[in-house]
Length: 193
Image (cartoon, rainbow, N blue to C red; front, side):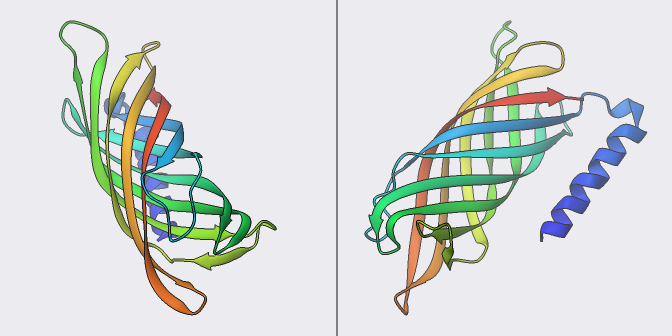
């Protein structure tokens, strides 16, 4: 799956540089964020987390674009079945649609995104060793925010996102399912080309 995603992104970038008529239909965004878990995982009380995401989008209609990307999110835990000072990491891929539309006569626009994720949850002990890996599986996300132009090519995208992932894991030889649901507040920096 990783090779397929990287191949798609590479082909998309090559297409951009070979087609001058496709200017400003593409955008690249880096979005750091702070995450708040809406529920605990088993006996693990997830603390405030952080994460980042890199996405590329192609606008195929005046206000509608498809996006794909990769994300990393980390939640620290003081005490849990994984031991003291463990961390829960969610990494993987995103894919979906985004709608961006001006607000009245303003240069500011509103943004709505919805899509799927193909992520996994890794649980690491305090030494940084992965002790549980859920394997990749499907989840979903929804997001709303603003697009604030900084220049002709760069914009800030403050947004609020909800993400949900349900994956099976094995704890002490018992199979169980965990739900990682969280709100993410972030500010993306987007470059259109």
